[in-house]
Amino acid sequence: METKQHETKSFSLPLGPIHVALEEPMYFKLELEGERVKHVDITSGHVHRGMELLATKRNFFQNVVLTERVCSLCSNSHPLTYCLAVENLAGIQVSPKAQALRVLAEEIKRTASHLFNVAILAHIIGYKSLFMHVMEVREIMQDVKETVYGNRMDLAANCIGGVKYSVNLELIEFIEKSLVRTEKHIKEIIDIYATDKMILRRTTNVGRISAEDVIKYGLVGPVARGSNVRIDTRKTAPYLIYDQLDFDMITETGCDVHSRAMVRLRETLESIKIIKQIIRNIPEGELNTLLPHIPAGEAMARSEAPRGELFYYVRTDGTDMPLRLKWRVPSYMNWDALEVMMKDCEVADVSLIVNSIDPCVSCTER
Amino acid sequence: MFKFLKVLVKNILQGPATEAFPLQPAKTPDRFRGRVTLNPDLCVGCGICSHVCSGDAIRIIPNEEKTGYHYTVWYNSCCLCGSCTYYCPTKAITMTNNWHNSHKQDDKFKMAEHHFIPYLKCDGCGAPIRLLPPHLATRIYAHSPVDIEKIIRLCPSCRQIATAERQGELNESNPE
Image (cartoon, each protein chain N blue to C red):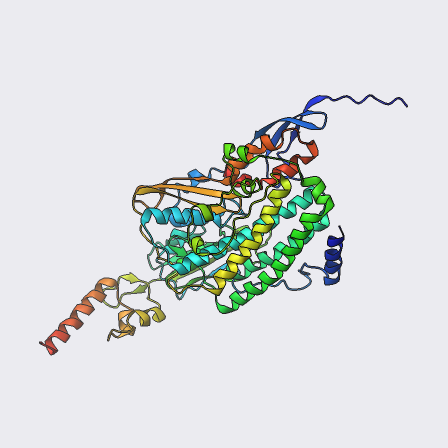
């Protein structure tokens, strides 16, 4: 049989909006030369739901619930930052107890979110059994959420002026027990991700982005920290009681998919450290201010969501509905850098690189 | 690879991580936010639940004769956020940990809880009022020498008059 001479052809390949390795709809038009990606065009807007307009048709209390449903994985960061913005506007002081409980909810969500992303990485490279194992470990945190808050994803922990829930001794013991289990498993998982040859071969030196490019593109969260850029809103602009807590900002120097995964994994341990400090020392005090009046004005707030800095802006006119509610999510900056990360990568690595920025499409397109 | 094999063996020995529902009951935490339920005896019809409800699942509509109001919670519009329960002053509306909400398409309009809650006539002027739940009244008037049984059956204006009369009697008997 005559063997065809291999030649490098240029062609364009559509990827998405529905694709096995992407959790959410995102459309990529890839210009390829053989197996190498030469150019990438990103089209978004498939899950635009008009939520910012919806927010101006609802009162302040209903918007806490609406913002919680922007995205499932950062479903605590959105209402928290929204509440922080409204509280800044109305000058509401949140009690130390409520602040501690807010941090508790944030860090439980962060642990689950990071584990989810790292599990998907294993799923994409075809390491299904590891994927299942990491998801099972994440399930411990899901059980914590279900037991303490009453739901696996939407915690409904925040309300304007404080929090809606409290924890009793029994729940604290349950959280503590679950943390011990999770920590043990995560240490094992970190060891596997750091040394497993299959993972290393697929993820190191893939999707590289230099620290200069990180700053140029304004990247945030684990993507920036994976390129050794020290940005973390919890450290650089502390909110709630983060300045009183002992935890480290995790950075890696690899600048690739692997270092971003390692940042996430090591951050889960930091989150567990924070949760332990909180549950040992929950201050006494009021949980919230019931039904406060929101005056006219404008305010903003920012916080560190699992994917990076989350920003909320609110403008009001003294009625019970906001005039404008605007949010900027971390994925908005991060997915712009995909064109840098995907430059000259193999076509098989595209979904891996997309996953490495932990894109939250429903947040970005709301 | 070897490290993960160890984990795999451990997981195999551990057995399945999933629950055998529906063959066995699934574990549901007490705090689980499931189907909403209303205790009509405690409801005062203040409407805060429908004000904070983001799914627009709660309807409070007075009947034509103004003898009471219809209270309806639609399970399929409810997003289980728990705001109504949280803001309800009398804790009349609560969340159960019942998550069995699946139903046939034909039954979708039956997926609601409905109550007709009658008004009470004010003992003073006959205006329609809702009875203040006695457990709340005992807290409100804990340090007041009023007859709770009597005062909770009065409308706000008749209550004012009753208070003024009582104060007047007190002043007369105690001129200093």
